[in-house]
Image (cartoon, rainbow, N blue to C red; front, side, top):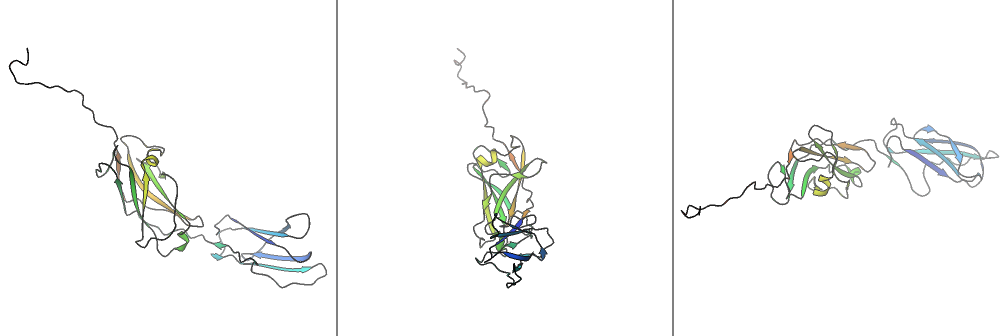
Length: 231
């Protein structure tokens, strides 16, 4: 797989030293060099600009030896390798819902007993390029920008329900830069396909307020109405 800015490298080894070589990658003429001092293995390269057609990147090698014998032009590899050019990001999406798990769950709050936050994230069942990609749960505090909450979660398959339930653990949530007592948090997910194209989802608007301060009793006193209690 490749995206804009990636370098495509084409290596080839002829049966004898070549006199003329014409090579195109993605329809563009490219330069060729020797990989080592002996003129036995050649290398061409091309940097994807973004104007190329999506799909498997075509190439062609036309060549002749030192005395002018021309070989058949080659447009496929001998080891069946190829490169798929993908610049289409995953479909736009909205987070379905966000909720807290563990301990004493109170709607809209994160307290000292909770253990994780779940992001119910929709995923396209028609986009096979997502398999091998990843989800990145994200959070923002107050009016700041969304930032990563924990590490990426690999997409191993496309769930039949069309949803993935992504968990942010207590440790990951608490270690995000900006996490603070008495602050408000919102959540979303970034989906990254196998080629590296990404789409940031829209938050569902759920606000979770952080309150982990345990209550204490400022004073404790016990009395009786017995007439002797003051003696």
